Image 1 (cartoon, helix red, strand yellow):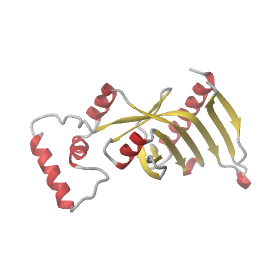
Image 2 (cartoon, one colour; image 1 turned 135 degrees about the horizontal axis):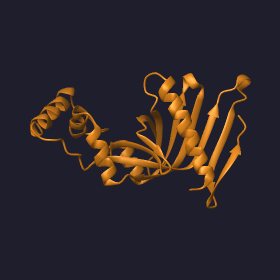
Image 3 (spheres, helix red, strand yellow; image 1 turned 60 degrees about the horizontal axis):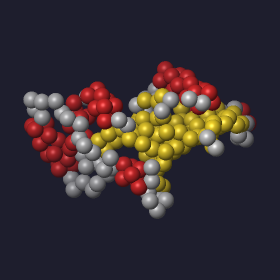
Image 4 (cartoon, helix red, strand yellow; image 1 turned 90 degrees about the horizontal axis):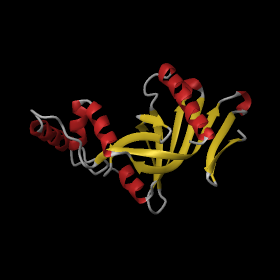
Length: 195
């Protein structure tokens, strides 16, 4: 791994660790931006489940709006904003599926009700009534009453493989610190960016 890529990921791990200690609520929350084949953007909040030298991993229903958009246009942007730290990290990159074994391992760690919910929800599709969703949930509870809940074939993990990671730290007078790591021409570069 390129030393600047390693430096960027280590720097991310440090600020993420501080966020998990100091930020109440969901310090793993990140805005995920995608675009469809025509370039129409969409953004939503998802949870980061792992970050390592390979990239940033989240899990989702692959038939959801974001799953369909990422199939059409496998690039994404992430934004982590930790207000109490007055820091933000931006990530842009290509998107790839995690290995089946990786998805299975994470699935096994999820609470049973979350597993059942993944089967019951036709994520992002119109819902005729709350009762329909609850009926589907009861059906899956009955189906797997005496068994482990298997991972649905349409539910897995996706990894954003970064080609840009930018760190932003608030400073007085809006003279913020911005450091961008970007991959171009086969190598990583580190540049300072005007606030």
